[in-house]
Length: 188
Image (cartoon, rainbow, N blue to C red; front, side, top):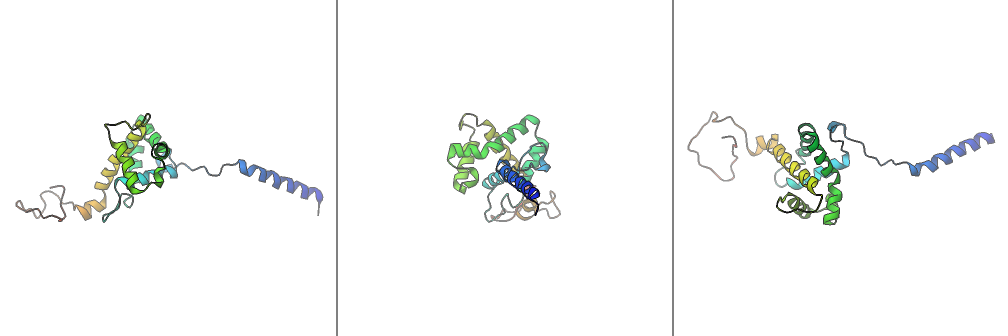
């Protein structure tokens, strides 16, 4: 065996091992679909948890099952102005840490009841939660607005819960009695 080659390879391996602790391999990649927002998968998980808190799964499908969080991001990416996008992203990126600072634990780790309490506190327009919470309130309010819009316009709601028919429809009955629990047509 060639000593010079062995020493050179050992030096390279030792140098490589010395550099590994200085490298940060945990950096999250920015999601390409939302180019204006510059958010990561971790931020998307926070949004998914928030949307699940706003419209949870019960005996009906929840917002996460219907992909409402993606709709919220698309609307924020495509329909908000630059200034509002910055407020939305600022609220999204700091939301988990803000909740940890003010409520004791990160939003992703809260149980459903505590998460609802946090969201209700931020949605309450009458009281200021804390200084600098404007972006977080804007983020939660915008998310709620788009989540409700997406849920109500989803195929599930329009076909299963409130079937859509043209008004007055082929079977118009002007004196129909309302029966509790019956599927309703919200369009007429």
